[in-house]
Image 1: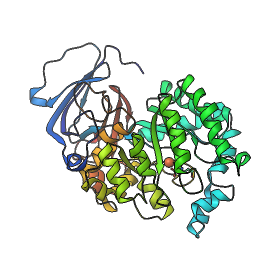
Image 2: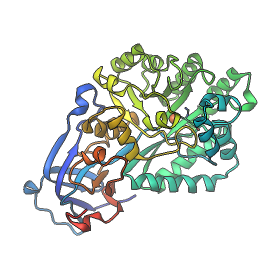
Image 3: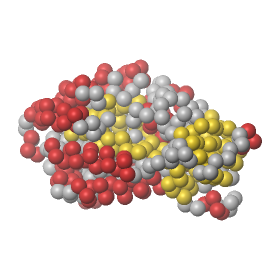
Image 4: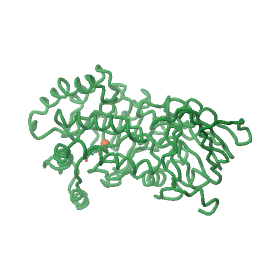
Length: 427
Ligand code: NIG
Ligand code: FE
């Protein structure tokens, strides 16, 4: 997307509200926002240059100038969905109902369903369909205010399809307004052909897949499903050490179903984030906070699996840096609903509106290694902006489960406009 020589000017915002800084905020710091009433902002060539009050706005004249009057609207940073699996083939509706009638998630996987079902569909879908379906999903996410998305491979589990998923994300990143952060997750499940010789699959990842991924520079992160019956702590360590040696940053699906030591391992390795954490131990959470590992909590997954929520409140109260993400995937969480995520965070996790905003913007950016570039509305950051149809960001939680995004701006360009601004105060 090019915005060469263009200037974006937002003025008369009821408020501009944002976290500040270039690193994840932790503990009580998550609750501190900058808030400017009758706010204004201008961005040049996709980067924010100035933020302040409309009264203080300097005189600007430029031939390629877009002016937005944000009267009656709250202006916030674009959301960062820092954990998704949005590139996949096929759907698994029947499993959703099996789980509701009591079959455990891991039992379905054990029987060759679950992730392995999606693997079959992904392996046979073809590249064009893969890109096309994923692109439509990005459209839907963007409409809800998501300007950056992390996406994982892990529905290929063979050499070609794993690389294909990552290439698809690279192409989408180049062509779509949403910025895509690709994560290699070949260790998402053990493919059937390796059943009973799981260590051989780990060797295949370490010796074949990871070097190819690194050589082609098609992933920024490596993630592992560290879980009982999937990948052990030792296997996870082995894969992530190899990934680190090749220059990839690290994430872990940690302590989702059973308490397994994933959080402790994330701290030991200095991973960027550990995600899920429903069953994470006190020590694991404390180790992560001490090492600066972002705790990414995914409450829609817990909701869909009818599991106990991760202890988000406790994580923040003990000095941790918390990010919130959707975990959008065709199995455990077939939803990328930001409004639902916020509703669960407010009502079930008892996070404050300020903590939620920080978790979905700056801390999400930190979880994808981009806190220096996105996640806040400050000079020097990319102009990734959401304009809400209501005058306060409090409406994100208060208007429970509702999408209140009016306009979305990516790198200084308006990419979504739902037209609520034309209604003035009558929304
Ligand atoms: O984060 N837990 C492992 N992976 C995904 C689910 C993937 C699937 O069910 O297809 C998750 O929940
Ligand atoms: Fe996940």
